[in-house]
Length: 198
Image (cartoon, rainbow, N blue to C red):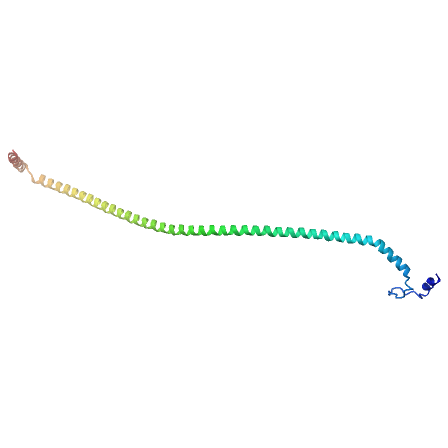
């Protein structure tokens, strides 16, 4: 035992505070103490290390499960996205086909509409010409009628005026004697006409 205590005493002065070093003297490090400390650490640390390892293992397994679940969700999301994209592409193609069909129909309606408009325009022009022609005929007939009426009125006035003048002249020129001669001449003419007709 004296050797052991001597080994502790022969260490010499303690190193100053704040310095740290590695002691390579096997007798100065007390191998027995070291072996006891190491043994205790190994004995008690085995459970701690095992529990740490189990915890790490469990963490790794749960992390692996979490990553697998996440991977599965991502794959499902990608599959769903692909299905939705396929459906969207199909709907887009259907919509494009409908658009082409509608554009074709619209073009036909436009062409037919222009043809119909041109036809209606020609019909309207022809109808307008006929109406104008009829109006022109009505106007001409009205003018002729008004001219005829005006002529008749003028003739009637001229006749009335001539008659009035003739009557005035006759009345002024006729005296009783001339008047009796005219009557007798007329009666003679009527008698002659009666004989001819009998």
